[in-house]
Amino acid sequence: MLDDISLGDLKRLVQVADSGGFSSAARALGESPKQVSRRIAKVEDNLGLRLFHRSTRSLHPTAEGELFIQAARSSLDRLVQTREQLSAGPSGRVRVQLMSLLVQPFLDWVKVGMIQHPRLEIELRIGDQVEDWTGEGIDLALTGMPPTQAGMVHRALHAPPAVLACSREYAERWGVPKTPQALAEHSCLCFSADRIHRQWSLQHRSGEQAEVLVGAQFSSSDSRALRTAMLVGCGIGVRMPADSLADLVPVLPDWHMPMPTLYLVFAPGRRGLERVRVVADALETLVQQAVMSL
Image (tube, rainbow, N blue to C red):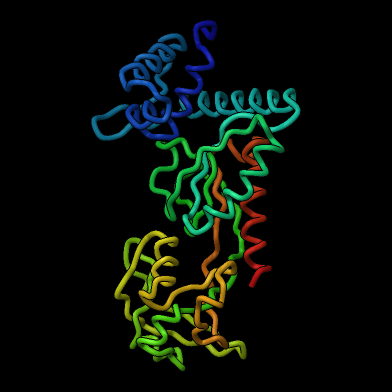
């Protein structure tokens, strides 16, 4: 019965299970939904088993499907790992989703990494939040939000504390706050997701804590846009380690903003792949370097 099931069929099974539907799986595979559905039905006929419960609104594996898909995923991963071992180095494509603020440091690594690992291919998706892990075929992501989808594996990384600053133009026009409470009278650059993050928590070097509801005249879900807005004088924001103080004015230098934990998130079955580990290690190093630069 297994003679008519190809490696491509196993990949389709795993992708459909991860994506939760034929259409999203087809997009990730570069095939048509009709083709994917037909091949899955052929596998079920060969096995004499129903692998997925289907309805007009949802698709999810049966109990038998869970077992077979788990075996298919494990087999595919072992084949890839063996291929990497035989090729004497990481090879193949890694789809990475990366928060926009770290794109430039990551590209600096890519320039060197592609020389060190000539068989490695990088496909970069840029965004601070991951909306569709499996539908886009993402292998690895660095994000500020832990995954909620079953099967995702993550590693917590400690981000550096945020140091506030503004452009010299902004300071000359509006002045610089002397206390955390005075931030409420300024234009502060806030990250927006489902809601605008206007509640800022600050900590003094002595350990004193302060909570401030800041004014958010400009907000964005893109961290790189917030940094650019600070540099051009739109308000008070977070200074990155690489930013030159010659162009910026420190704001409340005795205070810092504890940053949320960052997460390296691996799609199911991807953490053990050498090509994914190489990129994950590079991203972890980038975060560590940011901490040491402060």
